[in-house]
Length: 563
Image 1 (cartoon, one colour):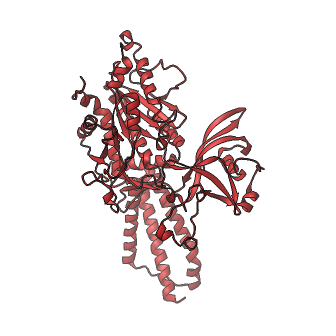
Image 2: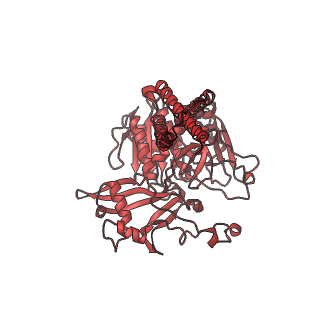
């Protein structure tokens, strides 16, 4: 290699090392002990990279014997690039856009990465609630100890949750202010007998759950997560599991074998073309830890689950597993204004509901409230809500009824005639599900006067055929709560020549008799394996829900409909 070229490489290496050391000094001085773990991890990664650079280039430098000549101007430019990198890391790992939206959006990303299934989302929500002072109660025992200023939560099937906080000024018959969302998302789920062997491969049989954009699941690095029933000490334990590494994949057919795909489109058959590959048959048999020739599932899959759970494969009695994408949720976009993730529909609403409930029920705030603040998270919305832990179940209504009755025990006549009915009539439900943002490549799919945009506020959903439960009155009440805190809103109506989806709103409104408004965070790629929404919209949703909890009782007093 020519000496001049060697000298250039050495110079670049020294400049790089100088920049790395400078960044390390600044990080130590700026962040100190309070530095973000993710910033520290990034700095450590750069240091490791510089070590690899030294290892690769040092022998060449020694062989050449060339003395590096440092160009001062280039070194300054390199150092400046390092400072820009540091600012980038702070924005990426500490705050987003430098505003209040940062912490809520970043915390949502962490929540999404922890919540691969409805069971995991419920578990993550419980951790948030318990950290904020909420106590667990059981549907199987009496609720005799409820009291003013108390904070409680209950779970059902470990995939649905109701949490509530009782105002210090609560009186029997006062209303419950509820934000309701759902914890489930479209995905493939393992069949009861999942073992498939064909073509020299071990595959996993799956059934589709909900209305997913199934073509987006092809050629993704996939894994499994869910709940497992494990035999431990003579009892059956209910445990959650998540395999973080990619273990399965659904490969597409090469274009050389499907020449018509460009003209006819990609139309996979979800029964015959959708089974993920777990391993080759030969390799899988070599890796299997137990004999399972007659079992319902591949022994290799059971071995992977057992390793994660810390049990023997034979101790696994049964399971409910989702196929999940292993790519982490992230803040993205050139201006770091988007969240790229699976399961935004509807974990974004679920998280904002729980977070707003916690924010609105601090000890000081709760002491002055006259109502009960509640969040309800249901499973199975994507398949109609018809389960004992779905929005069509009486879970929320039973929680309201039991709480109202328990809180009225010390009141004259235990709250008087029609306590439950009066409570429901004074209550209000915000049905929160994601909304369709205007798509720049398909603008004709939106009605001209109703085109929700990112960063422009919560979307109030309207439908004359009651696919949404919004009325003029409920819309006004929800907007007024936000207006008091300067939080924006926008509207959505589906085109007359298109079908309209629905939510848990009409189901609960009809079943319980509670006033309801349907709202949502605008997003793109709904029901894809990777969806996207705006970081500011998460902040807006959190602020709007908090404003609802804070202001609804006062706003409700200004409106009279039935007297």
